[in-house]
Image (cartoon, rainbow, N blue to C red; front, side):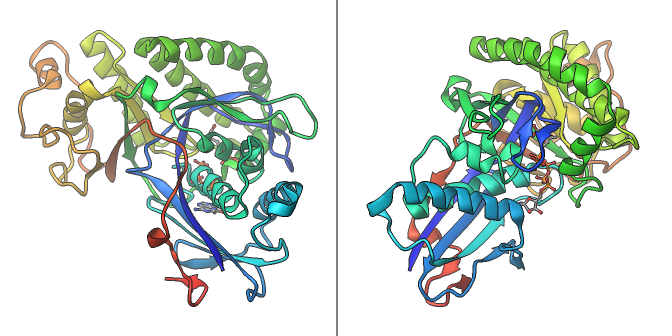
Length: 398
Ligand SMILES: Nc1ncnc2c1ncn2[C@@H]1O[C@H](COP(=O)(O)OP(=O)(O)OP(=O)(O)O)[C@@H](O)[C@H]1O
Ligand SMILES: C[C@@](O)(CCOP(=O)(O)OP(=O)(O)O)CC(=O)O
């Protein structure tokens, strides 16, 4: 038996991918740009094994067996990897006919608009490539065929997915913009409003947008190329204000397109909009753009904040979104907040705001389920045998 275990990160788009020009090959109508999140807080973990005695390809996701041979996206990734392995010729570790057993787990909610498909397919492709002994730049073009946004999770730091021009998708690949070491104090607070399964999948939502929205054409042609260039420059210069303003504008435009879709796709809810108002009020109060929001195809907010401002922003969140669990580690998960996480701790900029002329909007209690504090991070990593999710003596999940 051959066995490998790897982890892969989540990525959150700053300039969104929304709309395909080819549904099967997953080719987008515009470039997109994302930041990879640290695997210390959120990741997909996958063990893949190949054995001469396995009868069929099987996969388990979060403890449940899920279709693999009947999942066209997973099979497309597998076939593409096997073609690459075949091209390697003699150095094959085991015959390609051997069936696979794959076990995967996400340590965060699946299909809730928290980019589980991105981390999941990136992890699947990276782990299978490791199993087959493939090291190839083409991996992002393969992960793309699992889920578009997955191609960006194969790199750390800030990543651009180039839409490409070729009809076979060979140039629709993700490339790094800068590594995570370039802007290590770029932190993220994910405000989880709802972590249950969403109503309209990204796949369906963007398909309907391409069919019915006029705005989406304008965005892809006029807005995105300009924004990609400007945000790339801002990232290179570590210019947080420009970075933040472009990020918020692009999120808003993406949701405007969701509403311009017919029938409309509504991903943000009242709490999401309250978060938007909070961010603008906070930025106005400090007189600078210190926090940026972005929302994917769900109500949860992803806030970008520099490390040094996290305690102050969190304090302000606790004020604006009071929560009975605010002091607990179950409420603010992830990177510890240097002793200032609790609402009763030392005064911060936010308190100064509240004592001055500005007040932050106050919302009902307990609107947020929990908060994840994380930061920019690395791409996928290979783990050791002791991290395996599959029992080698049974070929089944532990
Ligand atoms: N660890 C994993 N390994 C393989 N496939 C996964 C994994 N995690 C999620 N997926 C696939 O991704 C699907 C969820 O994708 P979906 O786009 O609905 O949600 P999401 O990725 O959480 O949200 P979004 O892409 O809008 O941020 C799952 O049903 C499963 O098919
Ligand atoms: C809103 C988004 O998160 C959309 C992600 O869409 P998916 O990559 O999940 O869609 P498919 O390619 O159909 O699997 C924006 C983004 O990540 O760029």
